[in-house]
Image (cartoon, rainbow over all chains, first blue to last red; front, side):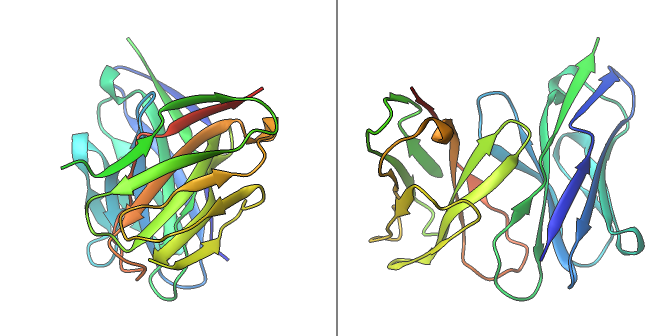
Length: 114
Length: 115
């Protein structure tokens, strides 16, 4: 069975600082990996996804994530935080074979301090 | 282009009442699902459907019913509301069931409080 672990339920960074949100997954088969963002009182929006090919994936709003199979990780980064990045971020996984629903991590709330 | 539309946006119920949360999508997506979001718990899958007439249970199905009579609509029914069902409910859709990296599209959620 798949699972997703997001380390840190709350991360706080200063404006302009590096953002690093951690995601580790467990899957018995190669996975598809996603990061979603949820702004207050809104639904989830896709930030980026990894399916196959290049392991460094670029998404919207300057975010990127790197798939590291050896570490079973898919950490989300952004070089310079902006106040508008304050939101909740969810990592999700689904295997690339077989039919199972998307499994989400518990989420990480990002606060950006001026 | 409406995407995934959920109604109502807010609802307050009394314990024991029943209600239906509506979800509609206009993208001709075969796969639809319902999640509940609770603080510190992330999103947990309630029920999902791979196409009209086909539904299946997710992680937390107890107390909820679904049906899928059309491709567009996937309502979620609370049979007898309990305070433990106080949550934010999200409906999501995807082109189809195949696990080929297609993203899910989410509605804006229904905030449900049960007193």
